Length: 253
Image: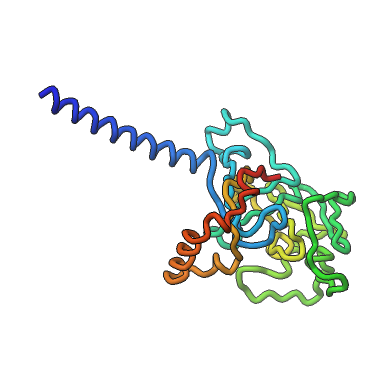
């Protein structure tokens, strides 16, 4: 009987350990950290396609949760790399930089960003459009001048969204919203094109790159079974050759 009792206790201990591990993992991914990967070049050269991130989910609070009172919370600051649910499709997550805070006045003049009439120094941003390329009303000068015959026939994105928030040639960020932009300013689908990020959709702050694997953005768009098999084969075959070892455990700034 003693031996049977011992085996039963050991099995129970393993089961309890497994349950506790699962609970801690669920708690961690719900409130503390979550893993994301970068599928597009919109944050180059700070974040590259194939970077895998850990995101600090509690630093900005749990969006009204009771545990906010005991967490060492921080306010979202200009320049923070944030992860948020894309307002036009909540199944997608975007990684951008918080540029405009609630109440800020923003404008872009010939690629120079002004916040509250002050030119903003942005050492992290890059411009990859070739010299002499065409000027884009959203990319290089923003907000565009009001459209006299505004007509919107539906769809996910209103190209004239900015007109409701424009005053004296500037965008005014409403309360509890943020204006987010990619570091790769000439190749980033960000707030210039689809609008503000509501506070409640912000998941957390980029913390660290725990792994980086050389790939291209098209690979993440190929999701059928054959493509997945090819991707796994590539990973197994080229893990050491394509891993960007120098980016491992790089702090996100």
